[in-house]
Image 1 (tube, rainbow, N blue to C red):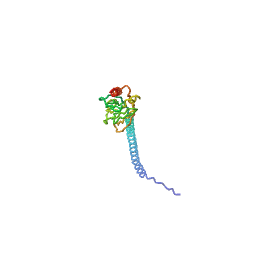
Image 2: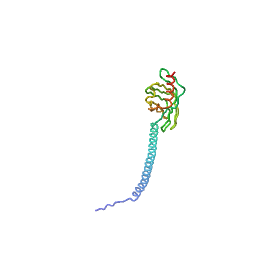
Image 3: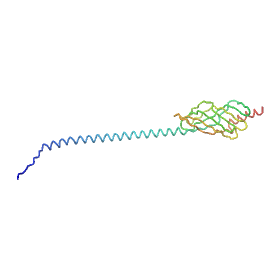
Image 4: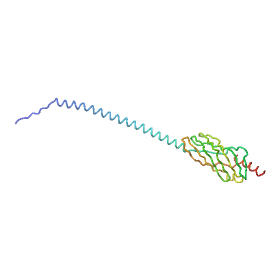
Length: 194
């Protein structure tokens, strides 16, 4: 029986382990780079996502602020004595408008019509900041017999916000007991006496 001998080449083993030894650090370095890249991508995504959510929230708050337009209007003054023709008095006057909202507005138009009464603006716009009050020039037409029976005049205001949205607002203006009623009744009484 012949015994076969197995020859082990120690040099070959050293070459493989050396080659494997170099490959292991390269793979380890590659894994570390990939981990760093993934972490960087995650952090960047979180930052950008946070900015996006913040911008979205700010945009929504801005839209809500502009959507909450509110105003108050009251008769302010009458200019001149007016003229009465066939029981109908025509006067020029002013309406005081207050911006009760949180954003600046421009009052573009104001019109009102009720039993025996009509009011409309003269076409001049009025910019009002939050909380500001300003006069709007108006032309008024009152029927002497019935204009002040209801006490309230339904009015519609066309308002433009600073982001160029136009909003229509209905607001009843009190006619009874105010300066408009006093002056109209005086003018109507002078005409009926004369």
